[in-house]
Image (cartoon, rainbow, N blue to C red; front, side):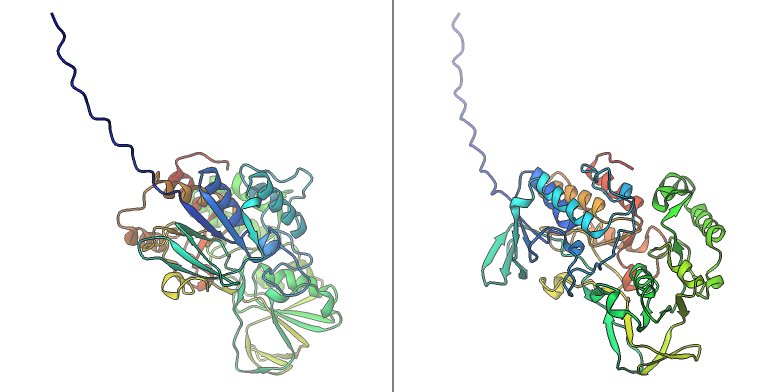
Length: 445
Protein backbone atom coordinates (compact mmCIF):
# COMPACT_ATOMS: atom_id res chain seq x y z
CA UNK A 1 0.00 0.00 0.00
CA UNK A 2 1.41 3.24 -1.03
CA UNK A 3 2.13 5.90 1.55
CA UNK A 4 0.09 9.11 1.38
CA UNK A 5 1.83 11.97 -0.28
CA UNK A 6 3.62 14.18 2.26
CA UNK A 7 2.38 17.76 2.27
CA UNK A 8 5.20 20.23 1.77
CA UNK A 9 5.03 22.74 4.62
CA UNK A 10 6.19 26.26 4.01
CA UNK A 11 9.33 27.11 5.92
CA UNK A 12 8.64 29.55 8.73
CA UNK A 13 9.82 33.06 8.15
CA UNK A 14 13.00 33.91 10.00
CA UNK A 15 12.25 36.30 12.86
CA UNK A 16 13.43 39.82 12.35
CA UNK A 17 16.13 40.52 14.89
CA UNK A 18 15.35 43.44 17.15
CA UNK A 19 18.01 46.12 17.18
CA UNK A 20 20.49 45.62 19.98
CA UNK A 21 19.83 47.85 22.96
CA UNK A 22 22.39 50.60 23.36
CA UNK A 23 22.32 51.84 26.93
CA UNK A 24 23.90 54.99 28.29
CA UNK A 25 24.86 55.39 31.93
CA UNK A 26 25.64 58.94 33.05
CA UNK A 27 28.11 58.84 35.92
CA UNK A 28 30.92 56.46 36.91
CA UNK A 29 30.48 56.77 40.64
CA UNK A 30 29.71 53.73 42.82
CA UNK A 31 26.08 53.58 41.66
CA UNK A 32 26.83 54.07 37.97
CA UNK A 33 29.46 51.34 37.80
CA UNK A 34 27.14 48.94 39.63
CA UNK A 35 24.42 49.51 37.06
CA UNK A 36 26.88 49.29 34.17
CA UNK A 37 28.17 45.95 35.42
CA UNK A 38 24.64 44.49 35.48
CA UNK A 39 23.84 45.86 32.02
CA UNK A 40 27.04 44.47 30.53
CA UNK A 41 26.33 41.08 32.09
CA UNK A 42 22.94 41.14 30.36
CA UNK A 43 24.65 41.54 26.99
CA UNK A 44 23.82 45.16 26.18
CA UNK A 45 26.05 47.66 24.49
CA UNK A 46 26.90 50.05 27.31
CA UNK A 47 28.54 53.47 27.25
CA UNK A 48 29.30 55.30 30.50
CA UNK A 49 29.94 59.04 30.39
CA UNK A 50 31.96 60.48 33.27
CA UNK A 51 33.08 64.09 33.43
CA UNK A 52 35.86 63.28 35.90
CA UNK A 53 39.08 61.58 34.87
CA UNK A 54 38.70 58.51 37.09
CA UNK A 55 36.15 56.21 38.72
CA UNK A 56 34.83 57.17 42.12
CA UNK A 57 32.25 59.93 41.86
CA UNK A 58 31.72 61.61 45.21
CA UNK A 59 34.62 59.66 46.71
CA UNK A 60 37.29 61.35 44.59
CA UNK A 61 38.93 63.70 47.07
CA UNK A 62 40.34 66.91 45.68
CA UNK A 63 41.77 69.67 47.88
CA UNK A 64 39.93 72.33 45.88
CA UNK A 65 36.12 72.55 45.56
CA UNK A 66 34.83 70.09 42.97
CA UNK A 67 31.92 67.80 42.17
CA UNK A 68 32.90 65.68 45.17
CA UNK A 69 31.89 66.69 48.68
CA UNK A 70 34.27 64.47 50.66
CA UNK A 71 36.96 66.18 52.68
CA UNK A 72 40.44 65.25 53.84
CA UNK A 73 39.42 62.97 56.72
CA UNK A 74 36.11 61.59 55.42
CA UNK A 75 35.31 57.98 56.31
CA UNK A 76 32.21 56.04 55.40
CA UNK A 77 29.43 56.01 58.02
CA UNK A 78 28.14 52.53 57.22
CA UNK A 79 30.40 49.61 58.05
CA UNK A 80 32.46 47.63 55.58
CA UNK A 81 30.28 44.57 56.19
CA UNK A 82 27.16 46.35 54.93
CA UNK A 83 28.79 48.60 52.33
CA UNK A 84 30.47 46.16 49.96
CA UNK A 85 28.94 44.91 46.74
CA UNK A 86 27.53 41.39 47.11
CA UNK A 87 29.88 39.87 44.56
CA UNK A 88 33.00 41.93 45.31
CA UNK A 89 34.07 41.97 48.97
CA UNK A 90 36.25 44.76 50.26
CA UNK A 91 39.85 43.79 51.03
CA UNK A 92 40.25 41.95 54.32
CA UNK A 93 42.72 44.53 55.61
CA UNK A 94 40.25 47.39 55.23
CA UNK A 95 39.05 48.78 58.58
CA UNK A 96 35.41 48.64 59.68
CA UNK A 97 34.94 52.17 58.36
CA UNK A 98 37.22 52.77 55.34
CA UNK A 99 38.40 56.23 54.34
CA UNK A 100 37.79 57.96 51.02
CA UNK A 101 41.09 56.85 49.44
CA UNK A 102 40.38 53.19 50.23
CA UNK A 103 36.86 53.48 48.87
CA UNK A 104 38.02 55.09 45.63
CA UNK A 105 40.54 52.27 45.15
CA UNK A 106 37.79 49.73 45.84
CA UNK A 107 35.46 51.24 43.23
CA UNK A 108 38.22 51.38 40.66
CA UNK A 109 39.08 47.73 41.29
CA UNK A 110 35.39 46.81 40.93
CA UNK A 111 35.10 48.63 37.59
CA UNK A 112 38.22 46.91 36.28
CA UNK A 113 37.23 43.45 37.53
CA UNK A 114 33.79 43.47 35.88
CA UNK A 115 34.90 44.98 32.59
CA UNK A 116 33.20 48.32 33.16
CA UNK A 117 36.39 50.36 32.84
CA UNK A 118 36.76 50.00 29.04
CA UNK A 119 33.16 51.20 28.60
CA UNK A 120 33.74 54.50 30.43
CA UNK A 121 34.37 57.67 28.45
CA UNK A 122 36.29 59.84 30.92
CA UNK A 123 36.39 63.62 30.71
CA UNK A 124 33.08 63.69 28.85
CA UNK A 125 30.31 65.88 30.24
CA UNK A 126 26.70 65.40 29.17
CA UNK A 127 25.01 68.76 28.65
CA UNK A 128 21.51 67.55 27.83
CA UNK A 129 19.47 64.41 27.32
CA UNK A 130 16.14 64.66 25.52
CA UNK A 131 13.63 61.97 24.62
CA UNK A 132 13.39 61.03 20.95
CA UNK A 133 9.91 60.65 19.45
CA UNK A 134 9.21 56.95 19.17
CA UNK A 135 11.69 55.99 21.87
CA UNK A 136 15.29 56.46 22.85
CA UNK A 137 17.35 59.44 23.98
CA UNK A 138 19.57 61.94 22.25
CA UNK A 139 22.47 63.22 24.30
CA UNK A 140 24.39 66.39 23.60
CA UNK A 141 27.94 66.38 24.94
CA UNK A 142 29.99 69.35 26.09
CA UNK A 143 32.03 69.32 22.88
CA UNK A 144 28.87 69.61 20.78
CA UNK A 145 28.66 66.01 19.64
CA UNK A 146 25.36 64.16 19.83
CA UNK A 147 24.78 60.47 20.53
CA UNK A 148 21.63 58.35 20.48
CA UNK A 149 20.78 55.51 22.83
CA UNK A 150 17.81 53.21 23.18
CA UNK A 151 17.84 53.53 26.98
CA UNK A 152 19.22 55.99 29.53
CA UNK A 153 20.34 55.41 33.12
CA UNK A 154 20.93 58.55 35.17
CA UNK A 155 23.45 57.91 37.95
CA UNK A 156 24.81 61.40 38.54
CA UNK A 157 24.06 61.46 42.25
CA UNK A 158 22.04 63.96 44.26
CA UNK A 159 24.67 65.34 46.66
CA UNK A 160 26.23 68.02 44.49
CA UNK A 161 23.91 71.10 44.37
CA UNK A 162 24.20 72.85 47.77
CA UNK A 163 21.13 74.15 49.57
CA UNK A 164 22.08 77.34 51.41
CA UNK A 165 20.22 78.62 54.48
CA UNK A 166 18.45 81.97 54.49
CA UNK A 167 18.18 84.24 57.50
CA UNK A 168 17.36 87.93 57.91
CA UNK A 169 20.33 90.25 57.58
CA UNK A 170 23.67 89.76 55.93
CA UNK A 171 26.68 87.76 57.07
CA UNK A 172 30.01 89.37 56.11
CA UNK A 173 32.45 86.73 57.27
CA UNK A 174 33.47 83.60 55.37
CA UNK A 175 30.32 81.66 54.44
CA UNK A 176 30.59 78.30 52.69
CA UNK A 177 28.58 75.14 52.24
CA UNK A 178 29.83 71.82 53.60
CA UNK A 179 30.23 70.73 49.96
CA UNK A 180 33.23 73.08 49.73
CA UNK A 181 34.80 72.10 53.07
CA UNK A 182 37.99 70.18 52.33
CA UNK A 183 40.19 70.51 55.41
CA UNK A 184 40.13 71.96 58.91
CA UNK A 185 43.50 73.67 58.45
CA UNK A 186 42.10 76.96 57.02
CA UNK A 187 40.01 77.32 60.19
CA UNK A 188 42.97 77.25 62.57
CA UNK A 189 42.43 79.72 65.43
CA UNK A 190 39.20 80.99 63.87
CA UNK A 191 35.77 81.32 65.45
CA UNK A 192 33.67 78.79 63.55
CA UNK A 193 29.91 78.15 63.41
CA UNK A 194 28.59 74.97 61.79
CA UNK A 195 24.90 74.91 60.85
CA UNK A 196 23.13 71.54 60.89
CA UNK A 197 22.94 68.28 62.79
CA UNK A 198 23.44 65.68 60.09
CA UNK A 199 26.52 63.61 59.38
CA UNK A 200 28.46 66.29 57.52
CA UNK A 201 27.68 68.96 60.12
CA UNK A 202 28.86 66.83 63.03
CA UNK A 203 31.99 65.63 61.23
CA UNK A 204 32.96 69.18 60.27
CA UNK A 205 32.30 70.49 63.78
CA UNK A 206 34.58 67.81 65.20
CA UNK A 207 37.33 68.47 62.66
CA UNK A 208 37.32 72.27 63.08
CA UNK A 209 37.17 71.91 66.88
CA UNK A 210 40.61 70.31 66.79
CA UNK A 211 42.21 73.51 65.50
CA UNK A 212 39.79 76.43 65.92
CA UNK A 213 39.74 79.10 68.60
CA UNK A 214 36.07 78.20 69.16
CA UNK A 215 33.57 75.97 67.34
CA UNK A 216 29.80 76.17 67.79
CA UNK A 217 27.13 74.04 66.17
CA UNK A 218 23.62 75.36 65.51
CA UNK A 219 20.70 72.95 65.30
CA UNK A 220 17.09 73.97 64.76
CA UNK A 221 15.74 70.56 65.76
CA UNK A 222 16.79 67.45 67.61
CA UNK A 223 18.67 64.50 66.11
CA UNK A 224 19.42 60.96 67.20
CA UNK A 225 23.18 60.45 67.39
CA UNK A 226 24.22 56.85 66.85
CA UNK A 227 27.76 55.80 67.80
CA UNK A 228 29.75 53.90 65.21
CA UNK A 229 30.26 50.98 67.60
CA UNK A 230 27.96 49.21 70.05
CA UNK A 231 29.05 46.20 72.09
CA UNK A 232 32.31 46.15 70.15
CA UNK A 233 30.59 45.82 66.78
CA UNK A 234 29.66 48.36 64.09
CA UNK A 235 26.27 49.76 65.01
CA UNK A 236 24.68 48.80 61.67
CA UNK A 237 25.77 45.19 62.25
CA UNK A 238 24.14 45.27 65.69
CA UNK A 239 21.01 46.65 64.06
CA UNK A 240 20.98 43.79 61.53
CA UNK A 241 21.83 40.98 63.95
CA UNK A 242 19.82 42.14 66.94
CA UNK A 243 17.43 45.06 66.47
CA UNK A 244 15.88 43.82 63.25
CA UNK A 245 14.79 40.63 64.94
CA UNK A 246 12.24 42.72 66.81
CA UNK A 247 8.88 43.74 65.34
CA UNK A 248 9.00 47.19 63.78
CA UNK A 249 6.82 48.65 66.55
CA UNK A 250 9.32 47.52 69.21
CA UNK A 251 12.46 48.30 67.20
CA UNK A 252 12.22 52.05 67.64
CA UNK A 253 11.81 51.70 71.41
CA UNK A 254 14.73 49.28 71.68
CA UNK A 255 17.04 51.60 69.76
CA UNK A 256 15.90 54.58 71.81
CA UNK A 257 16.51 52.72 75.08
CA UNK A 258 19.96 51.55 73.92
CA UNK A 259 21.01 55.09 73.01
CA UNK A 260 19.70 56.45 76.30
CA UNK A 261 21.70 53.86 78.23
CA UNK A 262 24.88 54.42 76.23
CA UNK A 263 24.94 58.21 76.05
CA UNK A 264 22.00 59.71 77.93
CA UNK A 265 19.65 62.39 76.63
CA UNK A 266 20.47 65.16 74.18
CA UNK A 267 19.62 67.69 76.85
CA UNK A 268 22.54 66.32 78.90
CA UNK A 269 24.75 67.86 76.19
CA UNK A 270 22.81 71.09 75.64
CA UNK A 271 21.21 69.77 72.45
CA UNK A 272 17.50 69.73 71.53
CA UNK A 273 15.62 66.50 72.00
CA UNK A 274 14.39 64.84 68.79
CA UNK A 275 10.66 64.92 68.13
CA UNK A 276 10.76 61.80 65.97
CA UNK A 277 11.75 58.18 66.45
CA UNK A 278 15.33 56.99 65.77
CA UNK A 279 14.32 55.47 62.41
CA UNK A 280 12.04 58.28 61.23
CA UNK A 281 14.83 60.51 59.89
CA UNK A 282 18.20 59.97 58.30
CA UNK A 283 20.52 58.84 61.11
CA UNK A 284 23.54 60.81 62.27
CA UNK A 285 26.37 58.32 62.82
CA UNK A 286 29.00 59.95 64.99
CA UNK A 287 30.97 58.84 68.05
CA UNK A 288 32.85 62.10 68.65
CA UNK A 289 30.35 64.97 68.69
CA UNK A 290 29.02 64.32 72.19
CA UNK A 291 32.55 63.64 73.44
CA UNK A 292 33.78 66.98 72.08
CA UNK A 293 30.80 68.83 73.55
CA UNK A 294 31.43 67.45 77.04
CA UNK A 295 35.13 68.31 76.71
CA UNK A 296 34.29 71.92 75.90
CA UNK A 297 35.58 71.87 72.34
CA UNK A 298 32.15 72.19 70.64
CA UNK A 299 29.45 74.52 71.94
CA UNK A 300 25.79 73.81 71.05
CA UNK A 301 23.59 76.65 69.82
CA UNK A 302 19.91 76.75 68.80
CA UNK A 303 18.62 77.93 65.42
CA UNK A 304 19.76 81.25 63.98
CA UNK A 305 17.45 84.25 64.24
CA UNK A 306 19.46 86.72 62.15
CA UNK A 307 22.96 87.82 61.28
CA UNK A 308 24.58 91.20 61.02
CA UNK A 309 28.15 91.48 59.78
CA UNK A 310 30.05 88.80 61.65
CA UNK A 311 27.54 88.74 64.51
CA UNK A 312 25.11 85.86 64.60
CA UNK A 313 22.04 86.14 66.86
CA UNK A 314 20.30 82.92 67.88
CA UNK A 315 16.65 82.35 68.72
CA UNK A 316 17.44 82.20 72.44
CA UNK A 317 18.64 85.79 72.28
CA UNK A 318 22.37 85.05 72.58
CA UNK A 319 24.80 86.42 70.00
CA UNK A 320 28.38 85.68 69.02
CA UNK A 321 30.86 86.82 66.43
CA UNK A 322 32.21 84.23 63.98
CA UNK A 323 34.97 84.41 61.40
CA UNK A 324 33.57 81.49 59.39
CA UNK A 325 30.18 79.82 58.97
CA UNK A 326 29.90 76.36 57.41
CA UNK A 327 26.36 75.51 56.29
CA UNK A 328 25.86 71.74 56.32
CA UNK A 329 22.29 72.22 55.17
CA UNK A 330 21.93 69.53 52.56
CA UNK A 331 21.48 69.46 48.81
CA UNK A 332 18.81 70.08 46.23
CA UNK A 333 17.90 67.13 44.05
CA UNK A 334 18.55 68.30 40.51
CA UNK A 335 19.18 66.73 37.11
CA UNK A 336 20.01 69.64 34.79
CA UNK A 337 20.77 67.33 31.86
CA UNK A 338 17.07 66.39 31.70
CA UNK A 339 14.14 68.59 30.72
CA UNK A 340 12.44 70.01 33.82
CA UNK A 341 9.22 68.26 32.79
CA UNK A 342 11.04 64.93 32.98
CA UNK A 343 13.37 65.13 35.97
CA UNK A 344 12.33 67.73 38.55
CA UNK A 345 12.55 65.98 41.93
CA UNK A 346 13.28 68.97 44.12
CA UNK A 347 10.09 68.71 46.18
CA UNK A 348 9.01 66.48 49.04
CA UNK A 349 7.98 63.57 46.79
CA UNK A 350 9.84 61.55 44.15
CA UNK A 351 7.22 60.00 41.83
CA UNK A 352 9.25 57.05 40.54
CA UNK A 353 8.33 53.40 40.92
CA UNK A 354 10.82 51.75 43.27
CA UNK A 355 12.78 55.03 43.05
CA UNK A 356 13.91 53.84 39.59
CA UNK A 357 11.16 53.78 36.95
CA UNK A 358 9.65 56.89 35.37
CA UNK A 359 5.88 56.72 34.91
CA UNK A 360 5.98 58.16 31.36
CA UNK A 361 9.30 57.05 29.89
CA UNK A 362 9.88 53.31 29.90
CA UNK A 363 13.41 53.77 28.56
CA UNK A 364 14.56 56.10 31.38
CA UNK A 365 15.91 54.84 34.71
CA UNK A 366 17.30 56.56 37.80
CA UNK A 367 20.09 54.76 39.62
CA UNK A 368 20.92 55.77 43.19
CA UNK A 369 18.12 58.34 43.57
CA UNK A 370 17.34 57.28 47.12
CA UNK A 371 18.73 57.90 50.58
CA UNK A 372 18.98 54.68 52.56
CA UNK A 373 19.46 54.27 56.27
CA UNK A 374 22.63 52.46 55.37
CA UNK A 375 24.84 52.30 52.29
CA UNK A 376 23.63 53.25 48.85
CA UNK A 377 25.72 51.33 46.32
CA UNK A 378 24.91 47.71 47.25
CA UNK A 379 21.30 48.68 46.59
CA UNK A 380 22.10 50.50 43.35
CA UNK A 381 23.80 47.30 42.22
CA UNK A 382 20.46 45.46 42.60
CA UNK A 383 18.68 48.34 40.87
CA UNK A 384 20.95 47.73 37.88
CA UNK A 385 19.94 44.07 37.73
CA UNK A 386 16.27 45.03 37.75
CA UNK A 387 16.78 47.59 35.00
CA UNK A 388 18.55 44.97 32.88
CA UNK A 389 15.61 42.60 33.31
CA UNK A 390 13.19 45.39 32.38
CA UNK A 391 15.07 46.18 29.17
CA UNK A 392 15.16 42.50 28.22
CA UNK A 393 11.42 42.20 28.82
CA UNK A 394 11.88 39.75 31.70
CA UNK A 395 10.28 42.15 34.18
CA UNK A 396 7.11 44.17 33.63
CA UNK A 397 6.09 47.45 35.15
CA UNK A 398 2.83 47.56 37.13
CA UNK A 399 -0.19 48.02 34.84
CA UNK A 400 -1.15 51.18 36.75
CA UNK A 401 2.26 52.56 37.57
CA UNK A 402 0.89 55.89 38.80
CA UNK A 403 -1.18 54.11 41.45
CA UNK A 404 1.81 51.95 42.40
CA UNK A 405 3.98 55.05 42.84
CA UNK A 406 1.29 56.69 44.95
CA UNK A 407 1.14 53.64 47.22
CA UNK A 408 4.92 53.78 47.71
CA UNK A 409 4.85 57.46 48.61
CA UNK A 410 1.91 57.03 50.99
CA UNK A 411 3.42 53.97 52.72
CA UNK A 412 7.10 54.70 53.50
CA UNK A 413 9.18 52.27 55.54
CA UNK A 414 8.81 54.58 58.55
CA UNK A 415 6.98 57.86 59.20
CA UNK A 416 9.80 59.91 57.71
CA UNK A 417 9.78 63.69 58.03
CA UNK A 418 7.94 65.43 55.18
CA UNK A 419 10.93 67.40 53.96
CA UNK A 420 12.85 67.45 50.65
CA UNK A 421 15.77 65.80 52.45
CA UNK A 422 13.63 62.76 53.28
CA UNK A 423 11.78 62.56 49.96
CA UNK A 424 14.05 59.70 48.90
CA UNK A 425 14.53 58.09 52.34
CA UNK A 426 14.24 54.30 52.59
CA UNK A 427 15.16 51.64 55.09
CA UNK A 428 18.19 49.80 53.69
CA UNK A 429 16.94 46.29 54.41
CA UNK A 430 13.26 46.83 53.54
CA UNK A 431 14.11 48.49 50.24
CA UNK A 432 16.61 45.77 49.46
CA UNK A 433 13.94 43.12 50.03
CA UNK A 434 11.62 44.86 47.59
CA UNK A 435 14.28 45.01 44.88
CA UNK A 436 15.43 41.43 45.39
CA UNK A 437 11.83 40.23 45.28
CA UNK A 438 11.38 41.94 41.93
CA UNK A 439 14.45 40.30 40.37
CA UNK A 440 13.29 36.96 41.72
CA UNK A 441 16.52 36.06 43.41
CA UNK A 442 18.16 35.65 46.76
CA UNK A 443 20.81 37.92 48.12
CA UNK A 444 23.01 38.21 51.21
CA UNK A 445 21.76 39.87 54.41
